[in-house]
Amino acid sequence: MMELHKDLFSKKQWEIITTNNKYKQVIAAAGSGKTRTVIGYTMFSIENDFNANKILLLTFSKKACEELMHRFPESYHRYIEVRTFHAFCYHYIKQYHPVYSKYKFNILTDDLKEQFLKEVLEKNPVITFGIPYPILLRNFNKIQSYLPDLYQFLNRELLNYKKKFYYLEFEDLISMIINGLEKNEFWIEPLKNNYKHIIVDEFQDTDPEQMKFLTILKPEKLFIVGDDWQTIYGFRGATVIPILKFKSFFKRTKIFKLNENYRSLEPIVNTGNIVIAKSSKKSIKKVKSIRGNILKIPVLGYLLEYYKNYNFIVELIHKYQGMILVRSNYRRKFWLKKGVSEKQIMTIHKSKGLEFPVVFIDISKGWSGERNLTDEEIRILYVAITRAQNLCIILINTEINTLESFIYKQLLNNQLLIVKEDLLIRSLEKEFDYRLTA
Image (cartoon, rainbow, N blue to C red; front, side, top):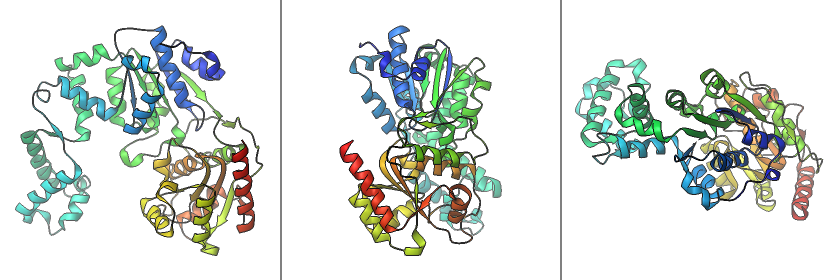
């Protein structure tokens, strides 16, 4: 193993890495070196607190697992297990569960589940009350409130089907582990004995079931890192509660904050701070840019609805190697048809954790249809802004009675320099020249 050098980290990062506490919570701002700190903490723990058990490092996507493992020197790999919550539970059940370790089980995909439920409905048409199958199947969980008898019937059929063919759904994986922990079942003993040191990256994406898993398991050491300002996966069940209330679950937690942004220039960081300040549920931290204001270009706004010149924007994205971020897949398809390449557009959700020199953010269309600005919509815009390193350009719609115009007026009014084509091009040229010479 290699020796970890203090000079690779900031003073605050090194304090987080080396402070001796059983439970540590790091609230890490966008661009603050979160991943570097996770890597450093893990390596330091292996070097200074070695035991026979592996450190379990949990995160929230397969891609993130691969990237984290890639950043560890190979000599450390044998001491670390990096998985998503679901993948960890899947492999544990496969190895230790008294039934599913003996019989090969498969994950029930959404398509297979929908096909099975459709067949059940076709055999029992009277129970649907004339509601078309596709509507019922697309809203399976919602019918519990409106048609409880139908939901219970379909759920019983589904459970029997899963048991008969050894199928599990993703949500079953963690609930089976939790159930085993609560009942102190024998097959859970290896989990309690072998995983006494757990690290959770991107903790803001935690849902209540994952939080319950941690609180019941209660490992000897727990290190969590995330940013409640970037909690944008509400549709998957994630909430800000686990990260904001973490100390109430683990009483002796020491809380640290990383509030120095190494990614973005000062105007971008300041605009992000102003936007997130409108959110009602958040941790308090003042994020500052380490890079300063080298280019002296503010965050720019372009009034897209006045010009309707989508081709102009597409040309700029291509020429200056920009990335355009959109709110929905529907809007992504729109820009693809206009000529943006696949490599230069993504949804804001997909962009989390990434960074780009020049970012265009489309708030002109494609956001929620409701004229209601939620905390999560504010956080989504914050995430988009903080992907930009050097230059952030926001495509605006100020038309009356749209959520997009409401977002602009409530969050961005007076924060942007509204520009026309000539100044927009000059700003992009200035950034591009800086990039070439930096």
